[in-house]
Image 1 (cartoon, rainbow, N blue to C red):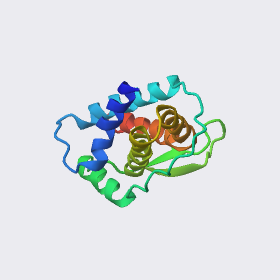
Image 2 (image 1 turned 90 degrees about the vertical axis):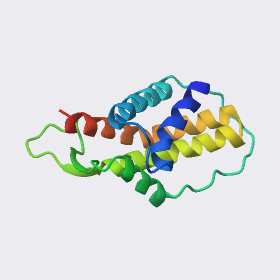
Image 3 (image 1 turned 180 degrees about the vertical axis):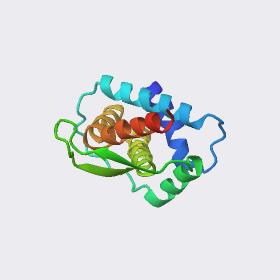
Image 4 (image 1 turned 120 degrees about the vertical axis):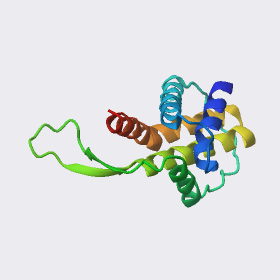
Amino acid sequence: MSKLRKLIDQITEFGINPKVGTSDKIDVLKKLLVEIYSEYLNVEFEFDNNEYEEEPEFDYAEIRQNVKSNFPEFDWYSMVLDLNEMKPNAEIGIGDALDDLTDIIKDLLAVKWKMDNTSEMDALWKFDFSMRAHSEQHLVDLLKYIKDKNQ
């Protein structure tokens, strides 16, 4: 759990601090995203049946503004909506790298809050649930965006 906590502290810094002081932010971010993904794929927990207070709502607009300040080159991108559909005119959608990272950070801030205010098992459950239900797709899309943009 301490490794996950350290990773969360590092990646959420991009949404909390408008001027993260590192020169190789893209490389750092890629490594952090891969490590977070690895933690998710290996997470083990037992469901905690205790009742806890809900985590606070974290300010999307403020996080997004800080992400934009740290990654001003992040932009919109296109993506195929169904990669398994093999046809000449596949349906495409639009993604937003700023939104991807903002949503990942928001979800991880909720996990961090649970680490500090509930139990280890509750925090791990929140991490697993938020990744499975929401952040995993943002993470995969963001990694692909970064890879394609930096070719």
